[in-house]
Length: 44
Image (cartoon, rainbow, N blue to C red):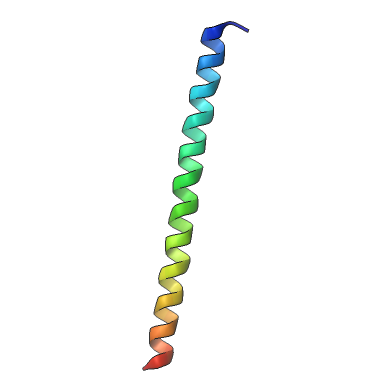
């Protein structure tokens, strides 16, 4: 395996990790927003 191959693999892994992090963050925000909406409707 050449250093260029390793660099390519690392770049792909980093790209996937960034996408997964963003998706996880979006899921957390979505769950938080749903929770806040449910709390507000319960208080009305």
